View (spheres, rainbow over the protein chains, first blue to last red):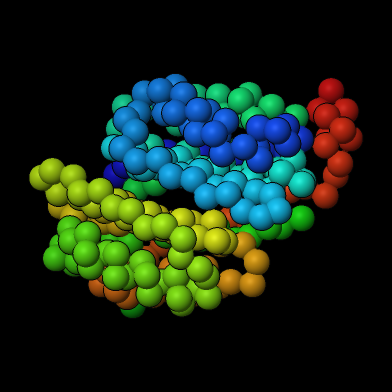
Length: 125
Length: 125
């Protein structure tokens, strides 16, 4: 049973002024949550020296995270959402908001196998 | 340039009493951070009704997240850490702490391509 989709995005060529600014990332992540059709429960950021920001959103439907390396124009994005949501839209929005030039995306289906755990256990023997 | 390893783990057959208990998950995640050799900056949890917990740790080296579906014995784990850390050890520890019977793991290398962004842009034309 698939519980959700986890969109993993590597953004390159991002704008330094955006990805080194926690306030801009907080605004971007709030809008990304709306784009996905998800519900924000908690938002936290950390600023690193001399550069770099982490911004994490806990959602009713899982999470969104942004970790940035402004000196390289690089941001590592995760959008993992469950239920009737569209994590791809959140990821697309973040790529635009961070002014990325190059985007690489992986989508991982998250969830359980459809085989009962006891049978899986036996299958492993 | 690889900045870190992102260990994605699907745990099945977990103990209901552990994965529906935010306090036990907070204790587990604190120990997992130590196992990885990482530094905890912020820890947050949300409890859902009738079941389910999210526990998120922001690290100096990226993040660890746990989202649980206790009614299915399922937990979705992410351990994304950078630098001289061992995310695999954190993931192994969490599988034991949550008493998982079946474990599926993917490791995603996170980071940048070694091609300058402008050349990537031209290569896409």
